[in-house]
Every structure is written in structure tokens, then in C-alpha cells.
Length: 383
Image (cartoon, rainbow, N blue to C red):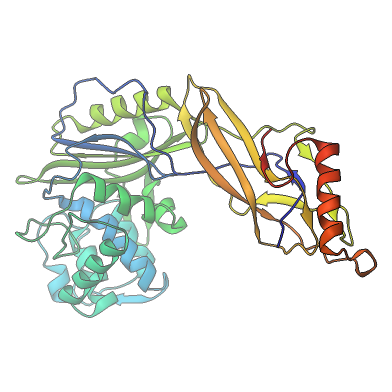
């Protein structure tokens, strides 16, 4: 069946299309990290990658995934009874006592702010019944997120021969975790009084870097210093991961400063004349709206200008069906296509029985409309 002509209303919509960005000024500052990755959370684009897929011990940054699995498994108000095994876990601790009862929410604060290994153990046993079963859930979650260089054998991050990840995978896990409002709230909290315990977040960037939203520190002698941070400015949200970085605070500040100076978010034009009114033939109404199905983000370099091109049929015969594919909106930089978003019909238009056309009349109308609006009626137009 021949397809369609419409109205496009594209006012104040965020666009887009996971893009690979090339040509920006490379990050050249020296950093202490053995591995470093910077990810745009909006698109998932990797903006900086230095040994990002190398496998390493990741210490307590493991707890980002632990929290994610717990949040997807347990209710926040569920009661956890602390076992003797959990209370006895070595390393960083919130000093849980055997038999003590706390909510999942309370233990998550201890897990993410004070990096309590005992809290991690207690949450894992509560969520899955055993540490082994919980590790299986961690690995399954990592697999679903596309983590190809990760394997987890415990919930706290103490060194293990088969416990490792990489900077890219940690960024993916963190991006997913940051979509959870409870996780996001906890990792952005500087200090908190939770029950009888007072917590201070180990992430110094919350105090010293404008726009920091979290996320998690980690350290063992074998792993070195691991840091995952998330910061946002002017609508741009970034996740930075460094592994084995003696000067991690400075590394993150330098990497984030570079990215915020190089990249920006772009919206579609918010002009009232950004409206295309085109006829529908033999329909109960004479026009139909075309819109993007999703509202997504476009990341571009700050010194580049983005232009847009619509690609739609000249017109359509009724009936038109809501949700059907209509055409494309293409984003261009320096005349080169950098991405494309699908456009769909926003409403249905039924055929007007009194205006039903035979094949010859459809052809005649098609050429008449082409003559009126210009161009071949069977090709796309651009604007």
C-alpha cells in the first residue's frame, strides 16, 4: 500500500542515537591509573578508554553490583538477621553483631557509604541464602549487562583468584545501578545517621568536585586504589572508572574536566515554525502528526554545529495507523550524518468512505500533489 504524508511536531524534544564520536581533542593529560574509562550514561558511548578491558582485582567497587542485585531482589524494608559468619568477615566493617536485626535499606547505607564487608555478607546471605548462590546472581546480572571480562565470587570484593572485572564492565554495571533511585540517593549522600550508626561517605569527590553524584571507592594491597565516580554538568552525565590509580582523585578530576570541556548535549530546535503540514489523501482528516517514539540524548563535541534533516514520503493515502513507521530525522555534523532516529505516526486516520479512490484516481492524485508540492511523489524529501 502506498504510504504517507503528515505533520511533524518536534518541539523541545531531546533526541537520540547512540553515537560513536570521533575527531574530538584527545585526552592527553598524564594520569596515574593503569586502566581508565569514561562513559556517557545517556548513550553508553565510551569517550576515553585506556586498557579498559584488562582484567583486574576491583576490591570494594564490587559492592556496586552487590547493591544492584540486592535492590532487584529484596524489598527495602525487609528485615535481615545478622549471622555469626557475616559479623566475622574481615576488612572494612560497620561492626555488625551476631543476631542483630537491620533493614535492607539500613545495610545498603553501610555497604555503599562505609563499604562494610559485613553488610555485604549479610545482604548476600539474606538475598540468596548463601554466598555461592548470590555470586551466581551477580554473574548472571553481569552477563545480562554485556560484561565480557568479569567474574564474581563474593559480594564484598576481597581478593579472590576468580574475582575480577575491568574498567569498561564496571562502567556498564554502574550505569545500570545509577538508574535505581535508592542506589543513586545513597551514593550521593555525604553523611548520614542510620539507626544507631553514623556514616561518612568514603568518596572525597562529593566534597571536592562540583557535580559529583557518587559512586564507590575500593582498595586492597593487591588491587591498589580503584575508584568509580559519576558527575553531571549542563545535562551531561558521565561515569569515570580508574583501576590501580595511586592518585585517583586527581585522575578523575582531570578526566571529567576534559570531558565537560569537550562535549555537550544538543536539543532539537524549539521554533514554532518547526512544523510541517502535509495532506492525507482520502482520509477522515487531512493531516497526521509524526513524532519520535523515544526521547533520547544526543552527545556531540562542543565546537561542532548540529543540523537536522527530515526524511518523509510526499503524502499518504488513508488509512494511516498509529505507531507505524513514517520516516527518519537525521542529525548531521559538518554535513555528515552522525545518527538517525525513527519517526512514527502519532495517530490513526481512517479512510473516508465517500472519498474512496480507485487505482487510477490514486495515481492521478499522486501526480497532482507532486506538481503542487514539487518532486516525485514516490521519493523522500528533505528539509
